[in-house]
Length: 161
Ligand code: INI
Image 1 (cartoon, rainbow, N blue to C red):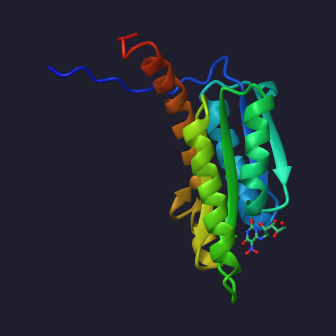
Image 2 (cartoon, rainbow, N blue to C red):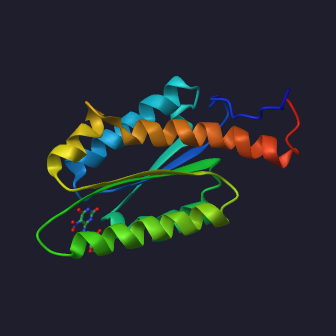
């Protein structure tokens, strides 16, 4: 039988930081609420969660980098929403925000939950922030909890715990 090493979803004792952008806040606020709901229901204490707000998705990587360096969180979630407009602006914001966060993920010792919506329409963003297509904030939070435990298991050489 192969050994299977998977992360568990236990937030007790964990310190979590959320970096959320304010642009399209009518969507992002729901991502933050979804993330908080998952964290608290998995045992993270309210006082162990810090929410940092930044202007837009463009700023997410730079703020997240500083939070990773200074907050001491066991996991960081980056939440935002980029919605296509009439110019190529959307493409640049999406590309740089996702690239920046992907680079941080690879370099970080702690997991970084990716909760950045990149949508063609406002309807798509609403669907993915707590209505019929789920809530990407909740997904990012749940994945981060799993990854905290998985990183610890891997750091222990993949030993069963
Ligand atoms: N920021 C977003 O988070 N979402 C968007 O949809 C968006 N659009 O489309 O313009 C957006 N732009 C702002 C950008 O992230 C920066 O905050 C701004 O350019 C100031 O640096």
